[in-house]
Image 1 (cartoon, rainbow, N blue to C red):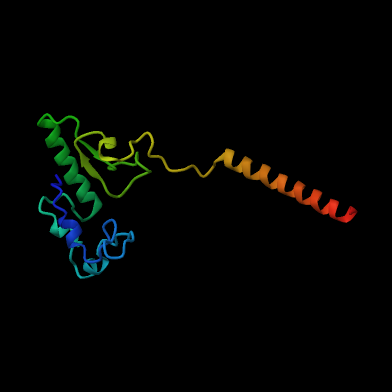
Image 2: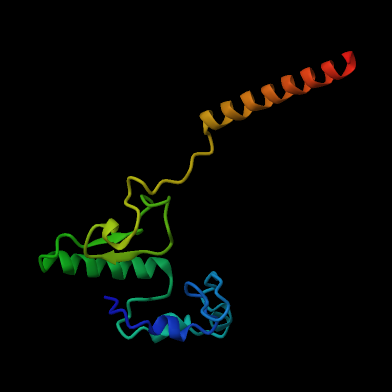
Length: 149
């Protein structure tokens, strides 16, 4: 479990975890691409004293997480769950979290409201079509009046 030590933030060589304090801008994590090319793990995972941040092949991490979840359930922690383990949250995250409470407690969306937007949004298409038709009609009226005056 994360103990909130913030070693991951301090270890990040690029200041990309969250907001860069020096520039005041948000940055996207590259998983220390240069470290990975050298056969090393990301700096945040290396610096984590509780091994809350782990990096490796997804299948191996999922297997280890399943074992850990089963152990917690056998110890009576029935509320423990793997968030993002399957495709119920945004169609799959390729990252997952062991939570001891509901996702909302941690500020995460639950499976009911974590859906990707639909590409077939009929209401949006109809609104765009009606707007386009009204724009064409308004243009025709404006040009028609222009020729009569």
